[in-house]
Image (cartoon, one colour):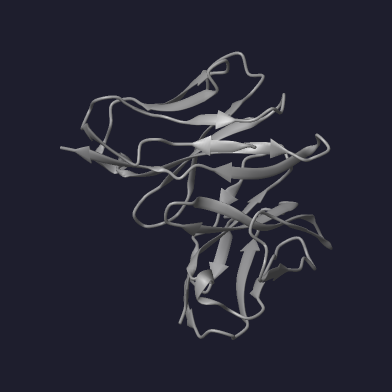
Length: 119
Length: 112
């Protein structure tokens, strides 16, 4: 079964330090996409970063990078130089194919990691 | 600016009532999605649409329906609201099946 697992319910990090949020996934599809979204206390879902299963390089977007280890089926989010505004819930998600192998853009989400950045 | 909006942002209703949550996007996206967010479950897909007149069931579709009569709107209807449907509901859209989904601000629904 396709599944996303985020094993860290909550984490603390000191301001200006780097932090890694873990995400492992389970799929037998040859093609898939992995996403990270941020949900601050205000509630909106903000797209952060995307990694395709065939991408050769790890994705980066500013202070966010995705540590993609295909053999381990992990897609950890790394936030460098944490800021107070990074305090939020972070969700890992995977785009799955249809039963017939076609593109669907259906996302399955992990349960999230609550990150608290301390001054 | 193009955007995706949801209304109402907060709704309290009674068990058994019909409720419709609105989702409107001005990006001209073909794909639209409804999710619910509950503690311990992350977000789960309720229904989705790839275009006008197209609707599909997601993981947790029982008790919900959608219709797509134009590109901009995908209303979500709870036919007979139940307390188990108390949740935060998010609408999302994407241009194609290969594109990133962008989310609306969410609707907090309470069923008493």
